[in-house]
Length: 58
Image (cartoon, rainbow, N blue to C red; front, side, top):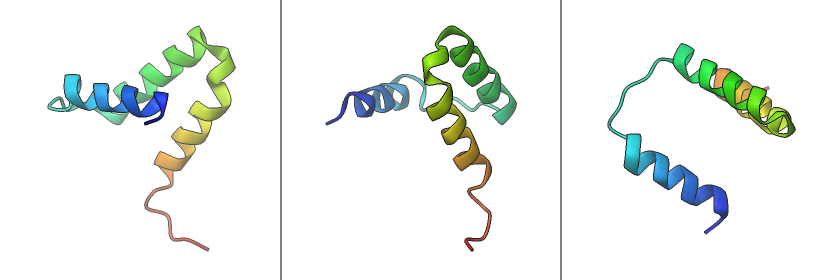
């Protein structure tokens, strides 16, 4: 198990029953990047991936 997997599993365990808006999630990601600018690239890649999930592949 990778370190990040534990974080994802913790998120599911602690907050998995909650419903949040994408606007709320975007605000939390912006807040995280503001506090941790070294993670800007992976957070931006995740956000782009999530935004394009329904796009047809080329």
